[in-house]
Image (cartoon, rainbow, N blue to C red):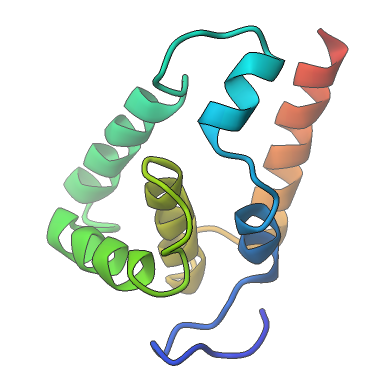
Length: 117
């Protein structure tokens, strides 16, 4: 992790790199030949929110507060639903529910599968 922001949240190097890469669905969809305005991960993301809330790992109200706080500061230049994804990853890393390295490995595995097609 890098320096703390004025919100009290540490910036997370992996998420900062993602934030600055222009990986919004509106940019990526044409590359993959997709005309759907919703990214394929939008609805599974909602399911992840529900599962985390039901398990007590990240209650909905706490997640929404984190979305508001991080979305208005560190990720204010990222449109939804990408900002929701970044704030969820950020919150999970801060809470120790997910390690930054683990997320990076999972992202690389997905990227490898996409590039094989």
